[in-house]
Length: 282
Image 1 (cartoon, rainbow, N blue to C red):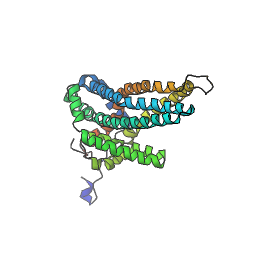
Image 2 (cartoon, helix red, strand yellow):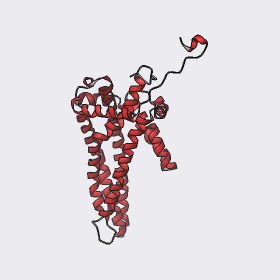
Image 3 (cartoon, rainbow, N blue to C red):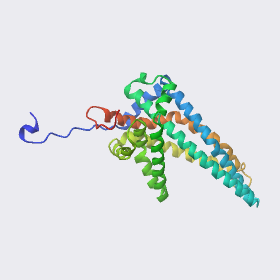
Image 4 (cartoon, helix red, strand yellow):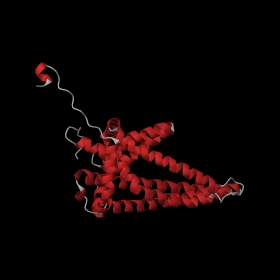
């Protein structure tokens, strides 16, 4: 006998939410399948592309530091030339990094497949790359939209930029796994509001780790730069260490990228289950 027998309404179905524990379970599965699925090889190739895209930035930072030294020496014309070339190289690097970001974003699709559809759905590095690059156009579009949204928020104050980055980051996953760009932004906010533990938990852990590493980097930078009285190495040392920092970040991405994807995949698993709200063709 139901409430309808007495003229009452049926109770609303209970919606299951993805919590942080569910995201950790997905992360464990992903890390165990990185090598046999070929995802590790695909991630390594993407990291190599990211390092190549960073080369103009490294050169630009070097030229910018040289420009500052030229100003201190009174060589203003030479400093201006260095600064113009530095700005051009860093713009080229930013464009290349955006392309690499869009290509790397596509790895969310094979990651989702090995977790939700089975480990045999991705058969090697070539297959993972094919799946990742298959949606490059939409991925590039959502990367541009995401970057503009975060930049616009950051122009007002850094806090709106952070809020925009957190609320909209699931949209990157949604588009990478086949959803439409137009509806991904509103759906992203909806996911964050309902699957808060899985989504905010993962990005919160990464933010905390990044904050700790950033503080360590500042301390190391201050030590290497010295106090200007000859107590430490030349400030150019910081520029020389920039490639090492980028390489370290790419090594850490083997863990951080699957961890970030785990929250979205955990939420997607709930949404795709019977009783969950359908959110796309998958």
